[in-house]
Each structure stands twice: as C-alpha cells, then as structure tokens.
Image 1: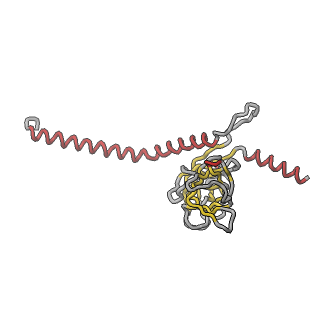
Image 2 (image 1 turned 135 degrees about the vertical axis):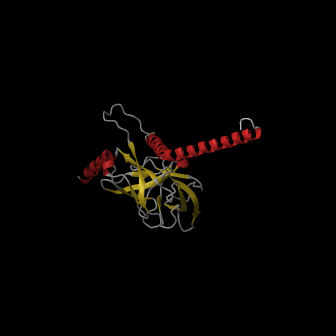
Length: 247
C-alpha cells in the first residue's frame, strides 16, 4: 500500500475512520460508567447550593456562642412510591441512622416535594404535595404576600388548588408561588409552583386558583431532606408561652 496511491489513500481514510469510531465508542463507554460519579458530584453540588440558598437570610450573631447553620441538607433517593392514588407516599433510602427526623422538609431539584411522615433506622416515608392531607401556605413571590392554602384534589399530579386568596388581590396567571418566611419546616423561597389559571365567582370573595407544580412527580428520583436546626428552640419557646398563658 506504501507504493500504491489509491490503496494507500483508501487504507489511510479507512484506518482513520476506524480509529475515530473506536475512540468515540471508548469515550461513550467511559462516559456511561462515569455517570454515577458525575451524578453524585452533581447532587453534592446541588446540596451545597441548596444549603447556601436556605441560609442566605441568616445573619450570624457574634453574641451567640453556639451559633450554627440553620438548615442542613441530606441527599436521599426515592426507592418506592405512587403518584396515582388520592393519598400518595414515597419511601426514601435514608432514615434515623442518617439523622432524618419526622416533620422535616423534603425538596427536589425543582421545588417542594413534601414532609417526612415517619422514620425507622434505615428508611423514611414522605407525604408529598400530591397527598390530599398535605397543606401548605404559599407566598406569591413577586408580591411578597403569603396567604391561603395549597392542597391536592386527588386527580392530576401536575396540578394543585390554592384556596383562601381574596379576589381583590392583584394575582395573575404565571405568578410564582414559593414557601413563605412563616414556615418553620421549609426554608423560605423554595418553589412550589406557578398560577396556571384563576377565576372569580360572584358568590365568593376568593379566587378559584389552579397551580402547576414545580416538581414533576412522575420523574422524581433524587431528593434533599432539609433539617431546620432552630426547630427545637422554637418549639421550646412556644411551649413556654403556652404554659404561661395556662397559668
């Protein structure tokens, strides 16, 4: 082939093409086997960003000796669950051994998922937004206005209902709804969804509002369990006030 231009050219082009194909195949295989580590890295980055987001409103008090970060985040994976029942539940692969507690917030890559309902050593059960017993008060982000109550009617897992918003408020379709500053469970500013449609009734003082969920529950796999380290102090203070009122 060295002395034949045609054969030499054919061999060069064929060998180059073959080498290129093998290289691409090798890179594809390497990429496939590297996916778990890349995903773990991505989730770790998301965890760090979420903690930073959750704690962005916290100001350090130098007079507080035991100052600590208010929110801590634990990565978890959904290993069982449903989206078609009226009262859906998810099971996570993390439990009490991983410091997961009842009542903690669960957030996905795109927004609110639910709260931890029960825990054993190795697993925890989550009540998601798409459970008819789950309720949450949202904040209309652009208005800094928190009111009403979001719930699920048990039908379409992509949509929720928002009740209790006065029809005299300047609410519009497309406005984003987030967790409010009044929640001790969820960090403020986490996406819940957006106003999909709204209507007024002559017989009511409130809007009828449909909310498109920020989280796609059909595709949800990895989540973040959020611990509010201030909850024990808040609960202790509230209990003291209740006891004072009782006396």
